[in-house]
Image 1 (spheres, rainbow, N blue to C red):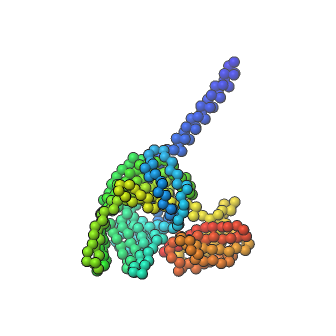
Image 2: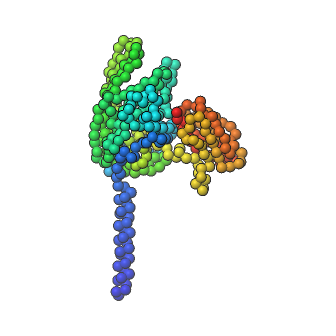
Image 3: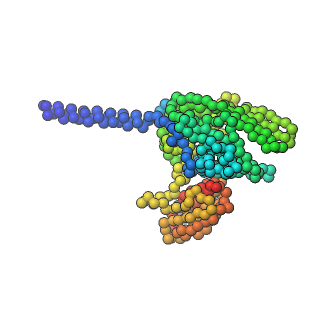
Length: 360
């Protein structure tokens, strides 16, 4: 009898321990995270972003504790890449205006028309253990270097970020081009960490905090050629899902206030899959592109001597280069615009793909 009771007791203890383990695992999987400055971008980081079709059916009010936000069905529009550099690596024309800054983001975006061009665009930051702020912007406006420096800085995050945190910041900026235009902006930002849980994107699943930012901008314009100007108040929202060690939000949804209702205008998500090509079973890349980011020349390698052909697309999906692929070859990209590119190689029935960035 005692022997049989001992067996039953051990079985009970084993089952009880398994139950405790399951509870602990469940608690761990759904527990909230903390975001610090260590989870922000650093100089040398390159991020690949996918711009998704705005889905107006997304419920932006869904938030709170232990949530699951499922964005796995987002449809891709375009892809782009952003590169971070040290602020003292900015062109000297800009660097002198941002002596207290320590980080800058080089955007792959540019604008060109018959009247003006805007290119080589940077967002300049200061990252510290207490906060992450935008110090200003810089770019080339129709060939003229144009630094735009905030007076009071735009504080994007205050650290550490935990569920329930709330803060606000006021920022202001003014710039003018003599004889052409004057612009000033006063910004009031309210940040709230209003949710935590799991966010699912088309490329991965992450434990995340959600940060909602409500931004009110008062913009003032004066156009010299028109002899007049106007003032405009714009309210907008940023919803950002932050994961540890990911640098930038794994998902960001931007919305515009329309009669008190946030209307989605843009959806971005990190595409970590773009950072590597199709892998061989032994873990080595079947298609390698170096250096990445690149400036002048790239080397394209495949692990095969079989006949191959390659096509390279820019972020808009246009073909920029194509031809026969050798096991290893070099391509001159010195005249290609900065941005993200995807190389596709057809190798004896295999379709290999990898992406790279040109950043100058």
